[in-house]
Length: 173
Image 1 (tube, rainbow, N blue to C red):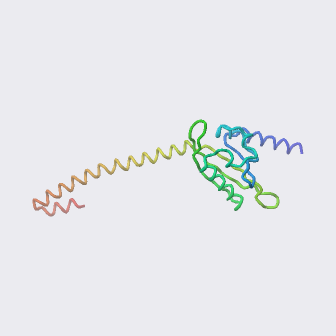
Image 2 (cartoon, rainbow, N blue to C red):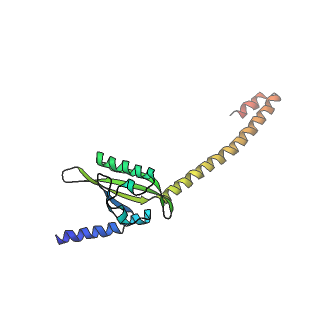
């Protein structure tokens, strides 16, 4: 028994020092556990979360609704859920991904859900930068081609006016 308690203490220490937010919710969507990482994400202490429902914490309504929906789905289906969202942190707006995993009891029913929330801001910014670069490249490639096409059309008109049909056919290729 002492060995099991020692292992549980090690797991608790790992979770408490994790950089990601780890939380446990009951069927009423109330925080039953949350680690210290929540303080960095929200600026609110752990004690403020415990026993309170998601919509009682002052989260942006869209984020609270997203979390509530995914947690309810996990309880209803017994399946893992995922979502991404923007959240106003003390350090400015950040992007997070949440993974919600059903916790199944001895009777086989979902008794709680565990949610792990981690920061994906750098990935989101990199994806946006990539999209902006691709948009710029596509625009830059279209513009020279448009100029070439315009010059070809002008040349075609000049060739047609001078009565050289074979040369005009070449321009269409």
